[in-house]
Image (cartoon, rainbow over all chains, first blue to last red):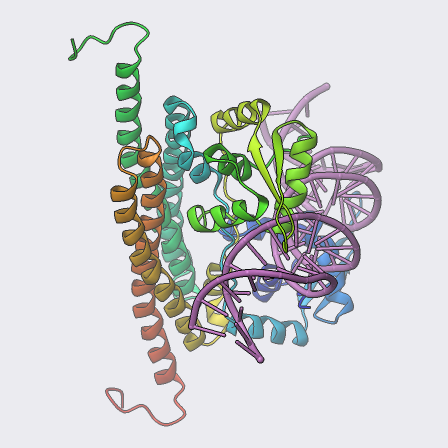
Length: 198
Length: 198
DNA sequence: ATGAGCATGTAACTGGTTACATGATTTA
DNA sequence: TAAATCATGTAACCAGTTACATGCTCAT
């Protein structure tokens, strides 16, 4: 029981302005990308279902050389559904983090593999941090005084803190992993360790 | 292409000691719960598939009054598969955070609803923080000198930082949301705002 | 010429949840 | 006497990804 729910991200995109399925995909990637995603395989069938339930309207824009654009817009019922969804408590994110699983069982593998994986995480989030700063500035200047701005900034702030946290965790863990790798190679050296021991 | 993969969490659990499907469920909940989960609907069929592929062995423990325990243990092939998996780069976590989606579109809803949702997030992670501290202490004392300990602590540390970050974000966002709620009620008051305006 | 961007959609599949069925034993 | 714990499993869903099919235009 409990299903056939409309996609809130699609409803949300259409609450900004009318769009085609193609546009919705781009919107989700560009603006919600760091905490949400939708694939065409979901979007197109979902739009049809939502249309048949009266949540959205379609208008066809004729084009030559390409398929016609099916431009969807929110109907009154869709708007109501979206506001109802906004008020409900969110479902908790489902926990599935492969990196942490690998780290947890790390002593069954080689430290260098774990190190590579954590370094990869670090650089991913270093890149993201730069992007967040860029987007934040852009939002402030280009969309100053849009009523949505404070909310966009709050969600962006979450991403920023999350990436910051992951960079810090990576650095702390890399120190520990290198220590472990070193201890292991001293305990069972192929070529005898020099540096310090005897 | 690329499928029929064995469940790494199950392989990992069995790498600790032989277990039944029931035990695996408990192990995952108790020790991997904040970054992983498996339901019976996955575990039991998966164990059969892994058995037929020669990754695990079964031993039946007769019991009266209950179903017999099917105790699984890692076979050599399963151990190899697990180590191979450990060395591969992890799949990035799939981004789907309903709370952030609601926050992003927050200006379409009522600030009080967002406030309630963020307060809920804060208290969830305040509770988790306490638990992490407890578990960390326990690990240090009960499992000192187990070779897995540093790895368990690293993954725990991630959870701790993540919860800490979410508490901080919640507090910062709650301040902002309350400010917005206030501004909105001053702009369109049902009973005239007193306090400051005129 | 090659690839990216525009634009639609479907089919096959994999992945995962939930509810159901069974039933004894222990604990509150 | 009610609920939790032990212990297995299946069937019916629901959710989501990927590959495929089509074909034009524009920039490199």
